[in-house]
Length: 152
Image (cartoon, rainbow, N blue to C red; front, top):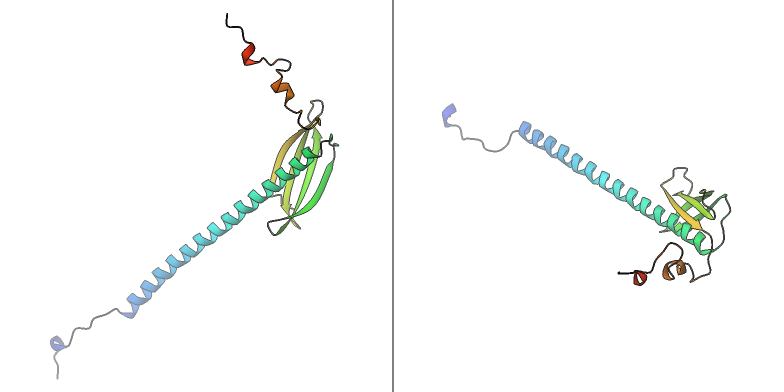
C-alpha cells in the first residue's frame, strides 16, 4: 500500500483550467470577428460613396457637354456602374446670376430611397467649343497682361 506522500505527482491542466482558457480564447476570437466585420462594412460604404460621387460628377459633366442652357427642372435616370444598378436625380435651379445654374445630383442604389451622395455643380452659358478661355488669354475686361505693366 502506498502512502499519500509516495503517490506520483500528476502534471497537466485540470478541466476547470482548460474551460477558462477556452472561454478567454472564444471571447478574443469574437472580438476579432466583430472588428473584421466592421472593417468590411466600412470598406463597402466608402466604395459606394466613391462610386456615387463619380456617377454624380459624370452626370454634371454630361450636362455641361450638352452645351445648352439647362431648364430649371428635375430629371432622373438609371445607370449601371461597377456591376451595380444606380439611380440619380438632378435638380437644376437658378443662382441669381444670369445664365448660371446650380445642379444638385443625388445618387442612390437602384430600388433604395436612401441617398448615398449628393454632388453640386454649376453650369454656365454655353460657349463656342475652344473659345471658353479667350477672356483670360486676351486680357479681357478687368484683367491685365503681366507684360503690360509699367515699371516706371
